[in-house]
Length: 356
Image (cartoon, rainbow, N blue to C red; front, side):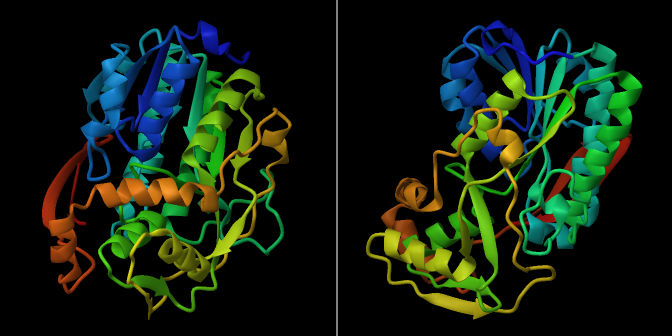
């Protein structure tokens, strides 16, 4: 199947479009696909926010359907006459995956299976699946290419690898074109504060110590969400059929250096660093080989150091002065709540306790 001309795309479906990555993708496609209307499907778990789509709604070209990607009838209806599907829905927090691994399997693997089946029913020309570099595991320190074996070492990576295996089997059965992006850690505004960088930024804003697992020597690669969006457009318009592309910036940073960068960036921060016990599998990740994506003309424009001032200002604006004083006195990270969440997943309902 052929790639798509961005100017000719009429209907796009974005799953998880009210989340961090999904909402940025919606905003980006509205600009670069000027004739397209976008349908957003989101189940509104804790990481989604209607406010993420405020600007998108004002264009009059975006509609929203609340629902789960595991609902086959709903998804089949959403995909009617779609030219492009961007699958950004799913669970993404590695630490959370150790507590509720079954939720990750349902959302990331089985949800993807349902979406692909619906795509086959509707004969959608192209889908972009947002996977994760976590499918590779730690690696051996050398740059990892797209043909490397999938050796995930945590439940999140395993669920993403399972989704890719389901795609590989189903796209042949339905004769589909599904292209996969495997990004490293994505950074940008609107990200939930459970993730490393926004957590550090918010804690530094309120003067709390930044928790570093182990000795902080674990290295991580990052990519700006704007660079992920440009990678997606490159793959839509010039990518190869059913191809997979790594997405990463040029830099690797150890966690302790990231903490220092945050403390240097946040104005007036009196926070320091506290070393805490490590979590399973919290080791250095190998860099990714991005030559396949760069061959399409893509280049990362952002870097963690350049992104930090904007991110620090954005997260600081979310925490008013009075709240900052209150949070600085809270014994734990921040006020927490426990609530029961029911989520449709495939043929049944999945219920768990979410703590955030």
